[in-house]
Length: 187
Length: 268
Image 1: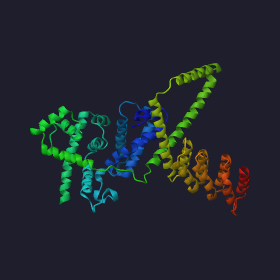
Image 2 (image 1 turned 60 degrees about the horizontal axis):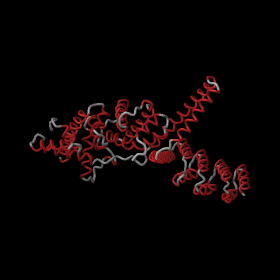
Image 3 (image 1 turned 180 degrees about the vertical axis):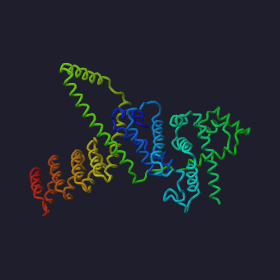
Image 4 (image 1 turned 120 degrees about the vertical axis):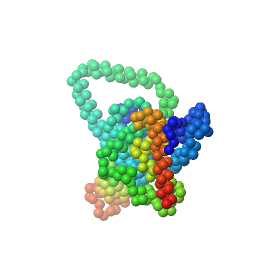
Protein backbone atom coordinates (compact mmCIF):
# COMPACT_ATOMS: atom_id res chain seq x y z
CA UNK A 1 0.00 0.00 0.00
CA UNK A 2 2.46 2.65 1.17
CA UNK A 3 5.65 3.09 -0.73
CA UNK A 4 7.40 3.89 2.49
CA UNK A 5 6.16 3.27 5.99
CA UNK A 6 5.06 6.12 8.22
CA UNK A 7 7.93 5.33 10.54
CA UNK A 8 10.47 5.61 7.70
CA UNK A 9 8.99 8.94 6.65
CA UNK A 10 9.02 10.29 10.21
CA UNK A 11 12.66 9.25 10.59
CA UNK A 12 13.42 11.17 7.39
CA UNK A 13 11.65 14.21 8.85
CA UNK A 14 13.69 13.78 12.01
CA UNK A 15 16.86 13.75 9.92
CA UNK A 16 15.96 17.03 8.25
CA UNK A 17 13.96 15.97 5.16
CA UNK A 18 10.97 18.13 6.08
CA UNK A 19 9.14 17.55 2.78
CA UNK A 20 8.30 14.07 4.00
CA UNK A 21 6.07 15.62 6.64
CA UNK A 22 3.86 16.66 3.72
CA UNK A 23 3.31 12.99 2.92
CA UNK A 24 2.46 12.22 6.52
CA UNK A 25 0.09 15.18 6.51
CA UNK A 26 -1.64 13.82 3.41
CA UNK A 27 -1.94 10.41 5.04
CA UNK A 28 -3.20 11.54 8.42
CA UNK A 29 -4.93 14.92 8.29
CA UNK A 30 -8.35 13.48 7.45
CA UNK A 31 -8.21 10.92 10.25
CA UNK A 32 -7.10 13.54 12.73
CA UNK A 33 -9.78 15.92 11.54
CA UNK A 34 -12.35 13.16 12.03
CA UNK A 35 -11.03 12.45 15.52
CA UNK A 36 -11.20 16.08 16.58
CA UNK A 37 -14.46 16.77 14.82
CA UNK A 38 -16.16 13.92 16.65
CA UNK A 39 -14.81 15.33 19.90
CA UNK A 40 -15.75 18.95 19.28
CA UNK A 41 -18.35 19.04 16.46
CA UNK A 42 -16.69 22.25 15.40
CA UNK A 43 -14.86 22.52 12.06
CA UNK A 44 -12.74 25.55 12.93
CA UNK A 45 -11.52 24.09 16.21
CA UNK A 46 -10.86 20.74 14.55
CA UNK A 47 -8.75 22.37 11.83
CA UNK A 48 -6.84 24.37 14.46
CA UNK A 49 -6.23 21.17 16.37
CA UNK A 50 -4.98 19.27 13.32
CA UNK A 51 -2.63 22.14 12.49
CA UNK A 52 -1.45 22.13 16.11
CA UNK A 53 -0.60 18.42 15.95
CA UNK A 54 1.66 18.94 12.94
CA UNK A 55 3.23 22.03 14.56
CA UNK A 56 4.10 19.83 17.52
CA UNK A 57 5.52 17.13 15.31
CA UNK A 58 7.76 19.68 13.61
CA UNK A 59 8.80 21.22 16.89
CA UNK A 60 9.61 17.96 18.65
CA UNK A 61 10.76 15.94 15.61
CA UNK A 62 14.21 15.41 17.06
CA UNK A 63 12.76 13.55 20.04
CA UNK A 64 10.92 11.02 17.85
CA UNK A 65 11.80 7.41 18.57
CA UNK A 66 10.60 4.69 16.23
CA UNK A 67 9.11 2.60 19.03
CA UNK A 68 5.63 1.34 18.25
CA UNK A 69 3.17 2.25 15.54
CA UNK A 70 3.30 5.75 14.07
CA UNK A 71 -0.50 6.01 14.27
CA UNK A 72 -0.31 5.40 18.01
CA UNK A 73 2.29 8.12 18.37
CA UNK A 74 0.38 10.70 16.35
CA UNK A 75 -2.87 10.01 18.19
CA UNK A 76 -1.04 10.37 21.52
CA UNK A 77 0.08 13.81 20.37
CA UNK A 78 -3.44 14.57 19.18
CA UNK A 79 -4.92 13.57 22.53
CA UNK A 80 -2.43 15.64 24.53
CA UNK A 81 -2.89 18.58 22.20
CA UNK A 82 -6.66 18.41 22.60
CA UNK A 83 -6.33 18.61 26.40
CA UNK A 84 -3.86 21.53 26.21
CA UNK A 85 -6.02 23.33 23.67
CA UNK A 86 -9.03 23.31 25.94
CA UNK A 87 -6.98 24.14 29.01
CA UNK A 88 -5.33 27.12 27.31
CA UNK A 89 -8.38 28.47 25.55
CA UNK A 90 -10.54 27.92 28.61
CA UNK A 91 -13.75 29.85 28.50
CA UNK A 92 -13.14 31.10 24.96
CA UNK A 93 -13.96 27.67 23.59
CA UNK A 94 -17.37 26.11 23.87
CA UNK A 95 -17.00 22.71 25.45
CA UNK A 96 -18.90 20.13 23.42
CA UNK A 97 -21.18 19.32 26.32
CA UNK A 98 -22.39 22.91 26.40
CA UNK A 99 -23.42 22.97 22.75
CA UNK A 100 -26.95 24.01 22.10
CA UNK A 101 -27.90 21.25 19.70
CA UNK A 102 -31.11 22.84 18.58
CA UNK A 103 -29.28 26.04 17.65
CA UNK A 104 -26.57 24.49 15.50
CA UNK A 105 -26.91 25.57 11.89
CA UNK A 106 -26.97 24.02 8.45
CA UNK A 107 -25.39 20.69 7.86
CA UNK A 108 -24.90 20.01 11.54
CA UNK A 109 -28.57 19.75 12.34
CA UNK A 110 -31.67 20.13 10.32
CA UNK A 111 -34.76 19.74 12.36
CA UNK A 112 -37.08 19.78 9.40
CA UNK A 113 -37.57 16.92 7.06
CA UNK A 114 -35.36 14.52 8.93
CA UNK A 115 -35.19 10.89 8.04
CA UNK A 116 -34.97 8.26 10.77
CA UNK A 117 -31.30 7.89 9.96
CA UNK A 118 -30.65 11.63 10.39
CA UNK A 119 -32.54 11.53 13.66
CA UNK A 120 -30.51 8.56 14.94
CA UNK A 121 -27.27 10.25 13.95
CA UNK A 122 -28.26 13.42 15.77
CA UNK A 123 -29.21 11.53 18.91
CA UNK A 124 -25.95 9.57 18.85
CA UNK A 125 -23.99 12.77 18.53
CA UNK A 126 -25.86 14.30 21.44
CA UNK A 127 -25.37 11.16 23.49
CA UNK A 128 -21.65 11.00 22.67
CA UNK A 129 -21.20 14.57 23.81
CA UNK A 130 -22.71 13.78 27.16
CA UNK A 131 -19.98 11.28 27.91
CA UNK A 132 -16.87 12.52 29.65
CA UNK A 133 -13.83 13.20 27.45
CA UNK A 134 -12.02 9.93 28.25
CA UNK A 135 -15.02 7.80 27.39
CA UNK A 136 -15.66 9.73 24.21
CA UNK A 137 -12.04 9.38 23.16
CA UNK A 138 -11.91 5.66 23.81
CA UNK A 139 -15.05 5.10 21.76
CA UNK A 140 -13.90 7.31 18.90
CA UNK A 141 -10.49 5.65 18.75
CA UNK A 142 -11.89 2.13 18.80
CA UNK A 143 -15.08 2.53 16.79
CA UNK A 144 -14.14 5.18 14.24
CA UNK A 145 -10.36 5.25 14.01
CA UNK A 146 -10.08 1.48 14.09
CA UNK A 147 -7.24 1.37 16.60
CA UNK A 148 -6.68 -1.94 18.37
CA UNK A 149 -7.12 -2.07 22.12
CA UNK A 150 -3.36 -2.48 22.60
CA UNK A 151 -2.79 0.65 20.50
CA UNK A 152 -5.41 2.63 22.41
CA UNK A 153 -3.72 1.51 25.61
CA UNK A 154 -0.50 3.11 24.33
CA UNK A 155 -2.29 6.28 23.30
CA UNK A 156 -4.04 6.56 26.66
CA UNK A 157 -1.09 5.34 28.65
CA UNK A 158 -2.92 2.52 30.41
CA UNK A 159 -3.28 -1.25 30.16
CA UNK A 160 -5.24 -3.08 27.47
CA UNK A 161 -7.56 -4.39 30.18
CA UNK A 162 -8.28 -0.86 31.35
CA UNK A 163 -9.15 0.13 27.77
CA UNK A 164 -11.63 -2.72 27.47
CA UNK A 165 -13.30 -1.71 30.73
CA UNK A 166 -13.48 1.90 29.54
CA UNK A 167 -15.01 0.87 26.22
CA UNK A 168 -17.52 -1.32 28.03
CA UNK A 169 -18.50 1.41 30.49
CA UNK A 170 -18.65 4.07 27.81
CA UNK A 171 -20.90 1.92 25.63
CA UNK A 172 -23.20 1.14 28.54
CA UNK A 173 -23.43 4.81 29.44
CA UNK A 174 -24.03 5.77 25.82
CA UNK A 175 -26.79 3.19 25.61
CA UNK A 176 -28.44 4.66 28.72
CA UNK A 177 -28.21 8.24 27.46
CA UNK A 178 -29.57 7.23 24.06
CA UNK A 179 -32.57 5.54 25.67
CA UNK A 180 -33.39 8.73 27.60
CA UNK A 181 -32.92 10.94 24.52
CA UNK A 182 -35.13 8.69 22.39
CA UNK A 183 -37.85 8.82 25.02
CA UNK A 184 -37.63 12.61 25.12
CA UNK A 185 -37.87 12.69 21.35
CA UNK A 186 -41.05 10.64 21.41
CA UNK A 187 -42.71 13.04 23.86
CA UNK B 1 -26.45 -1.96 33.07
CA UNK B 2 -24.52 -5.20 32.45
CA UNK B 3 -22.05 -6.25 35.11
CA UNK B 4 -18.37 -6.13 34.31
CA UNK B 5 -17.46 -9.75 34.97
CA UNK B 6 -17.23 -10.63 31.28
CA UNK B 7 -16.09 -7.29 29.93
CA UNK B 8 -13.24 -8.75 27.87
CA UNK B 9 -15.51 -11.24 26.13
CA UNK B 10 -18.32 -8.77 25.46
CA UNK B 11 -16.02 -6.06 24.14
CA UNK B 12 -14.14 -8.62 22.03
CA UNK B 13 -17.45 -9.95 20.69
CA UNK B 14 -18.53 -6.43 19.66
CA UNK B 15 -15.26 -5.75 17.87
CA UNK B 16 -15.20 -9.23 16.35
CA UNK B 17 -11.80 -10.05 17.78
CA UNK B 18 -12.65 -13.17 19.81
CA UNK B 19 -10.75 -16.37 19.12
CA UNK B 20 -12.80 -19.50 18.42
CA UNK B 21 -12.26 -20.73 22.00
CA UNK B 22 -13.36 -17.39 23.41
CA UNK B 23 -16.35 -17.34 21.07
CA UNK B 24 -17.34 -20.78 22.36
CA UNK B 25 -16.99 -19.62 25.96
CA UNK B 26 -19.01 -16.52 25.17
CA UNK B 27 -21.85 -18.57 23.63
CA UNK B 28 -22.01 -20.87 26.67
CA UNK B 29 -22.27 -17.86 29.01
CA UNK B 30 -24.99 -16.43 26.79
CA UNK B 31 -26.95 -19.70 26.73
CA UNK B 32 -26.89 -20.18 30.48
CA UNK B 33 -27.88 -16.55 31.07
CA UNK B 34 -24.65 -15.38 32.73
CA UNK B 35 -24.53 -12.77 30.00
CA UNK B 36 -27.93 -11.11 29.66
CA UNK B 37 -28.98 -11.55 26.01
CA UNK B 38 -31.43 -8.61 25.90
CA UNK B 39 -28.84 -6.27 27.45
CA UNK B 40 -26.30 -7.57 24.96
CA UNK B 41 -28.69 -6.92 22.05
CA UNK B 42 -29.13 -3.31 23.16
CA UNK B 43 -25.41 -2.91 23.48
CA UNK B 44 -24.91 -4.35 19.99
CA UNK B 45 -27.56 -1.99 18.65
CA UNK B 46 -25.83 1.02 20.20
CA UNK B 47 -22.50 -0.15 18.79
CA UNK B 48 -24.01 -0.53 15.31
CA UNK B 49 -25.82 2.81 15.50
CA UNK B 50 -22.54 4.51 16.32
CA UNK B 51 -21.24 3.19 13.02
CA UNK B 52 -23.98 5.07 11.18
CA UNK B 53 -22.36 8.40 12.07
CA UNK B 54 -21.04 9.79 8.81
CA UNK B 55 -17.35 10.49 8.47
CA UNK B 56 -16.76 14.24 8.64
CA UNK B 57 -15.16 15.77 5.56
CA UNK B 58 -13.13 18.93 5.33
CA UNK B 59 -15.15 21.75 3.82
CA UNK B 60 -14.27 22.87 0.31
CA UNK B 61 -13.07 26.26 1.59
CA UNK B 62 -10.92 24.72 4.29
CA UNK B 63 -7.64 26.56 4.83
CA UNK B 64 -6.00 23.59 6.54
CA UNK B 65 -3.78 22.62 3.58
CA UNK B 66 -2.67 26.20 3.02
CA UNK B 67 -1.84 26.72 6.68
CA UNK B 68 0.08 23.48 6.93
CA UNK B 69 2.16 23.99 3.80
CA UNK B 70 2.92 27.62 4.73
CA UNK B 71 4.16 26.41 8.10
CA UNK B 72 6.25 23.71 6.41
CA UNK B 73 7.81 26.18 3.98
CA UNK B 74 8.67 28.55 6.84
CA UNK B 75 10.26 25.74 8.80
CA UNK B 76 12.24 24.64 5.74
CA UNK B 77 13.48 28.20 5.21
CA UNK B 78 14.45 28.44 8.88
CA UNK B 79 16.20 25.09 8.68
CA UNK B 80 18.19 25.95 5.57
CA UNK B 81 19.23 29.29 7.11
CA UNK B 82 20.43 27.37 10.15
CA UNK B 83 22.29 24.82 8.03
CA UNK B 84 23.93 27.60 5.99
CA UNK B 85 25.19 29.38 9.07
CA UNK B 86 26.37 26.11 10.62
CA UNK B 87 28.18 25.08 7.45
CA UNK B 88 29.88 28.48 7.28
CA UNK B 89 31.13 28.01 10.83
CA UNK B 90 32.19 24.45 10.00
CA UNK B 91 34.12 25.51 6.90
CA UNK B 92 35.81 28.27 8.87
CA UNK B 93 36.77 25.76 11.54
CA UNK B 94 38.05 23.40 8.88
CA UNK B 95 40.14 26.12 7.36
CA UNK B 96 41.68 26.91 10.73
CA UNK B 97 41.83 23.44 12.21
CA UNK B 98 42.83 21.08 9.40
CA UNK B 99 45.63 20.96 6.95
CA UNK B 100 44.95 20.52 3.21
CA UNK B 101 46.54 17.11 3.51
CA UNK B 102 43.87 15.96 6.00
CA UNK B 103 41.03 17.35 3.93
CA UNK B 104 42.36 15.57 0.84
CA UNK B 105 42.62 12.33 2.77
CA UNK B 106 39.01 12.63 3.99
CA UNK B 107 37.80 13.41 0.46
CA UNK B 108 39.58 10.31 -0.89
CA UNK B 109 37.87 8.09 1.70
CA UNK B 110 34.52 9.68 0.86
CA UNK B 111 34.93 9.05 -2.88
CA UNK B 112 36.07 5.48 -2.23
CA UNK B 113 32.91 4.99 -0.15
CA UNK B 114 30.74 6.26 -2.99
CA UNK B 115 32.42 3.92 -5.49
CA UNK B 116 32.02 0.97 -3.13
CA UNK B 117 28.35 1.86 -2.66
CA UNK B 118 27.83 1.78 -6.42
CA UNK B 119 29.09 -1.79 -6.54
CA UNK B 120 26.13 -2.92 -4.47
CA UNK B 121 23.21 -2.26 -6.73
CA UNK B 122 19.79 -1.74 -5.21
CA UNK B 123 17.40 -4.65 -5.45
CA UNK B 124 14.31 -4.41 -7.68
CA UNK B 125 11.87 -4.00 -4.81
CA UNK B 126 13.92 -1.18 -3.34
CA UNK B 127 13.99 0.55 -6.71
CA UNK B 128 10.23 0.14 -6.95
CA UNK B 129 9.88 1.61 -3.45
CA UNK B 130 12.00 4.59 -4.38
CA UNK B 131 10.00 5.12 -7.59
CA UNK B 132 6.76 5.03 -5.64
CA UNK B 133 8.10 7.42 -3.07
CA UNK B 134 9.29 9.80 -5.78
CA UNK B 135 5.83 9.77 -7.31
CA UNK B 136 4.27 10.37 -3.91
CA UNK B 137 6.61 13.30 -3.24
CA UNK B 138 5.78 14.74 -6.66
CA UNK B 139 2.06 14.46 -5.97
CA UNK B 140 2.49 16.00 -2.54
CA UNK B 141 4.43 18.94 -3.97
CA UNK B 142 1.77 19.39 -6.62
CA UNK B 143 -0.97 19.44 -3.98
CA UNK B 144 1.09 21.87 -1.91
CA UNK B 145 1.55 24.14 -4.90
CA UNK B 146 -2.12 24.10 -5.92
CA UNK B 147 -3.21 24.80 -2.36
CA UNK B 148 -0.84 27.71 -1.87
CA UNK B 149 -1.83 29.18 -5.24
CA UNK B 150 -5.39 29.54 -3.97
CA UNK B 151 -4.35 31.50 -0.89
CA UNK B 152 -5.17 35.16 -0.48
CA UNK B 153 -1.64 35.95 0.63
CA UNK B 154 0.60 36.94 -2.30
CA UNK B 155 3.69 35.62 -0.48
CA UNK B 156 2.03 32.20 -0.28
CA UNK B 157 1.25 32.33 -4.00
CA UNK B 158 4.86 33.29 -4.65
CA UNK B 159 5.95 30.25 -2.62
CA UNK B 160 3.63 28.11 -4.72
CA UNK B 161 5.17 29.31 -7.96
CA UNK B 162 8.65 28.65 -6.56
CA UNK B 163 7.62 25.13 -5.55
CA UNK B 164 6.55 24.50 -9.13
CA UNK B 165 10.10 25.26 -10.24
CA UNK B 166 11.28 22.37 -8.05
CA UNK B 167 8.97 19.92 -9.81
CA UNK B 168 10.96 17.62 -12.08
CA UNK B 169 8.25 17.66 -14.76
CA UNK B 170 5.13 19.63 -15.55
CA UNK B 171 1.87 17.85 -16.14
CA UNK B 172 -1.04 19.70 -17.73
CA UNK B 173 -2.63 20.49 -14.36
CA UNK B 174 0.47 22.33 -13.15
CA UNK B 175 0.95 24.03 -16.52
CA UNK B 176 -2.67 25.22 -16.48
CA UNK B 177 -2.38 26.52 -12.92
CA UNK B 178 0.81 28.45 -13.72
CA UNK B 179 -0.65 29.92 -16.89
CA UNK B 180 -3.76 30.98 -15.01
CA UNK B 181 -1.51 32.64 -12.46
CA UNK B 182 0.40 34.42 -15.23
CA UNK B 183 -2.82 35.71 -16.78
CA UNK B 184 -4.92 36.45 -13.72
CA UNK B 185 -2.89 36.93 -10.55
CA UNK B 186 -3.36 40.46 -9.21
CA UNK B 187 0.24 40.67 -7.96
CA UNK B 188 2.96 41.61 -10.48
CA UNK B 189 5.73 39.79 -8.58
CA UNK B 190 3.74 36.57 -8.62
CA UNK B 191 3.14 36.94 -12.37
CA UNK B 192 6.87 37.54 -13.01
CA UNK B 193 7.72 34.48 -10.91
CA UNK B 194 5.20 32.52 -12.98
CA UNK B 195 7.06 33.54 -16.17
CA UNK B 196 10.32 32.21 -14.70
CA UNK B 197 8.67 28.99 -13.54
CA UNK B 198 7.03 28.44 -16.92
CA UNK B 199 10.35 29.02 -18.68
CA UNK B 200 11.79 26.11 -16.66
CA UNK B 201 9.03 23.88 -17.98
CA UNK B 202 9.07 25.05 -21.59
CA UNK B 203 9.68 21.52 -22.85
CA UNK B 204 5.92 21.08 -22.42
CA UNK B 205 4.35 22.42 -25.67
CA UNK B 206 1.24 23.61 -23.81
CA UNK B 207 3.46 25.79 -21.65
CA UNK B 208 5.11 27.39 -24.70
CA UNK B 209 1.85 28.12 -26.50
CA UNK B 210 0.27 29.38 -23.27
CA UNK B 211 3.14 31.78 -22.71
CA UNK B 212 2.86 33.09 -26.28
CA UNK B 213 -0.89 33.63 -25.87
CA UNK B 214 -0.27 35.47 -22.61
CA UNK B 215 1.90 38.16 -24.26
CA UNK B 216 -0.96 40.34 -25.44
CA UNK B 217 -2.92 39.87 -22.21
CA UNK B 218 -0.31 41.52 -20.02
CA UNK B 219 -0.64 45.17 -19.08
CA UNK B 220 2.24 45.44 -16.64
CA UNK B 221 5.47 46.63 -18.35
CA UNK B 222 7.52 44.46 -15.98
CA UNK B 223 5.66 41.30 -16.96
CA UNK B 224 5.87 42.23 -20.66
CA UNK B 225 9.65 42.60 -20.34
CA UNK B 226 9.89 39.30 -18.41
CA UNK B 227 8.00 37.56 -21.19
CA UNK B 228 10.23 39.13 -23.83
CA UNK B 229 13.33 37.86 -21.99
CA UNK B 230 11.77 34.42 -21.65
CA UNK B 231 11.01 34.21 -25.37
CA UNK B 232 14.61 35.11 -26.21
CA UNK B 233 15.87 32.46 -23.77
CA UNK B 234 13.59 29.90 -25.37
CA UNK B 235 14.34 31.19 -28.90
CA UNK B 236 10.60 31.03 -29.52
CA UNK B 237 10.08 32.79 -32.85
CA UNK B 238 6.41 31.84 -32.75
CA UNK B 239 6.03 34.77 -30.35
CA UNK B 240 6.95 37.41 -32.94
CA UNK B 241 3.37 37.94 -34.18
CA UNK B 242 2.11 38.44 -30.63
CA UNK B 243 4.85 40.98 -29.91
CA UNK B 244 3.94 42.83 -33.10
CA UNK B 245 0.33 42.97 -31.94
CA UNK B 246 1.51 44.35 -28.63
CA UNK B 247 3.39 47.12 -30.45
CA UNK B 248 0.10 48.25 -31.99
CA UNK B 249 -0.95 49.59 -28.59
CA UNK B 250 -0.65 53.39 -28.56
CA UNK B 251 -0.13 53.89 -24.86
CA UNK B 252 2.83 51.54 -24.57
CA UNK B 253 5.68 52.40 -22.24
CA UNK B 254 8.67 53.71 -24.26
CA UNK B 255 11.19 51.35 -22.61
CA UNK B 256 8.96 48.36 -23.18
CA UNK B 257 8.45 49.31 -26.82
CA UNK B 258 12.22 49.48 -27.26
CA UNK B 259 12.70 46.12 -25.53
CA UNK B 260 10.06 44.43 -27.66
CA UNK B 261 11.45 45.81 -30.87
CA UNK B 262 14.83 44.37 -29.93
CA UNK B 263 13.19 41.07 -29.00
CA UNK B 264 11.49 40.83 -32.38
CA UNK B 265 14.82 41.48 -34.10
CA UNK B 266 16.52 38.84 -31.98
CA UNK B 267 13.85 36.25 -32.73
CA UNK B 268 13.68 36.85 -36.48
